[in-house]
Length: 328
Image (cartoon, rainbow, N blue to C red; front, side):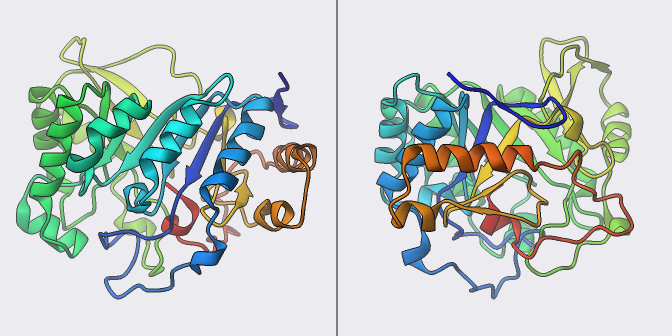
């Protein structure tokens, strides 16, 4: 098996695969309520194309695949995708990030197809705030999805939360209390400059330090050892074993240990969320490229990876694609 190593010695083992840029929520930090600039359906990778790319990635050393979006559960063939990835020789560990709105219906079929871990996005426990942040009154569907995932035996279930000043920034302790009571692993993520509306401002950022300080008013947090390539700084809560994670993507970048590549739903390979360059795999495949040709494109993408995302550089340029079109 090959290994994808960049010029800074980082070994790439993790592939984030976006299945669609479409979403059934309109989270304010991701896209405007009236957003409709979806990718043409004919540009989306087919199931066969997705599985082929992942097979090639595995042959190049990828051993973990995370299915993302947009909202991955909007793919009508989502169970088939999971099943076929799980059937690959030397199948990668398979996880998914979802808003859980429709998870109640498919949690058990997904587990039967081979899904073992899941991340669920939930930024607030308050119905009115949820509606304000997502422009949809569907928080009950999220809770139902979480319960269905638990009943189906998915473990761990991680909750991803983004805090916004003036909206839900005061909820960190309450979210952690709820997560602990429900045997869920909670991770807070700093808001990143990847919104389709271009409204991100550093001055409005709830930082990792802010989150840590707020949680520390109610809980004793002790750093865990062995972060490795994980984006989250993990802390034992009140001595453990329960933990909470804080992902300081902006103020505490983890680029030096990054092992991730990203495949957009329209078949563009990216070395970083914030990359300004992409490698077109879709057109290559549809023009008859061999597996070795596609593998070479993986190696070239990794070779060109920069040392960091550059958010804190005064010359930083936000990617034209929003998060929903890249894949979370």
